[in-house]
Length: 196
Length: 361
Image 1: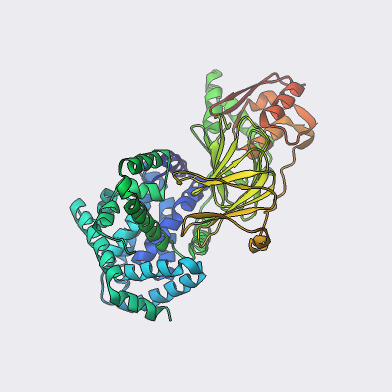
Image 2 (image 1 turned 45 degrees about the horizontal axis):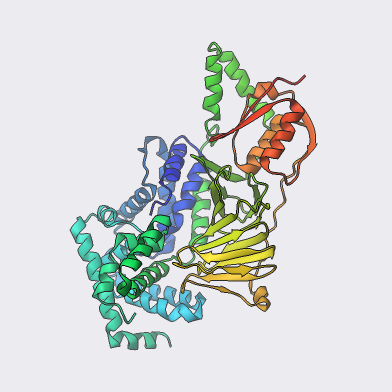
């Protein structure tokens, strides 16, 4: 995941010394994955926007007291997750039943995105997207961290406050569940229905 | 998804497989090539698992992230601008170096003050650095953080027009056998001819090999598809991860497109050319015409254009002025011309170009 750790370390040091350019570069390097992760935890993009903005402003203000870190991305993820969980009163977060209400919006998103996508591949991606929605939120989070963000199981365990074995189990269950969904004829019927 | 079986599930949990898909490098590619040789019966299962990881990653790409990122950043900037700006942002180690030099000279603090004063008066703000350059070991990272296309120069005389938010990374002096440039985003390349040292551009899974030509590489923000458009000359386009790359040869006005979703690299028919909305980004070239210019300004211009730090004593060169017209020659040629004119000598080292000479009258 950290393809260029040296670069991250250097930027982090320059940022700690007060370089706005280095700060901007850190932002550029990590913001897209961070948004992807944030949207998973908090689908309300306005709310997320405020939280990420606050995170970076606080980062800048406390730069002198930060420890040197090579795992910048991990650090940012951890900080954002902590922030969003602290905001947990919000109905969006973590396995709450109220989240069901959000899934409607979520679905809207995916329909819009799929229209933009290449027609030939849209059906495959869309079916995967639908299948992922059938997973629990924790499974979804772990799947993104593993297969989009490229985090190791150890890092995921640290980030999600789980032990290593639990992460293994979580991912294994998620993949097995995806496998079942794809075999289920009901799923294909559902897709047919969704696509109309 | 038919072959999604237990074997696939176990392959999906392989760290090495995930890095092969998400951030392939020579090591992982070699590993999996060997694995395929050793496990010929499992190649199909491997490609299945690889495809699933690819699709999972693709599914998680956040739609609209660039807009959201830009909007968050403007909010952050507004808040930070309320604070006083830091004194000397990102001047690498120069400040420390100047100070050390001063300290060596019998620790005269006054001199340190004078040098600092020179720095301020002799480096006019008109040469604002538009592209952020970061030199790490011998690699140079150059990112266009402005909202307009910007030209950057490579030491061999090649020129790269970077679109906003795009960046390249390369060995600072292109000191290897191959001239290799890693691209993130969109750029237009004008490559200096050097048949002995081919020029490579890497963008995602796509590799473009060139002998001397101009072409554009663009990545679609939504789909991640990568487009290569050749305006002059000839290039070979292939996939980085393909076990047996069969390059597509492109010449004038031909286009190849790499579809991220299917991992297919195909050449577009010529008449589809107008499908590509903006063909070539334009950015004003940096002028290397100098008329009675202080050489310290010339050094600054070159430092900005090439992203390579120049190390020299401000005081020594402070009275040197020069009238010269430099064009597409490689950086070293430019430096030779300048050094000859002012009787200075230069050395190219890992962390930049070091100039020495005598004060001009």
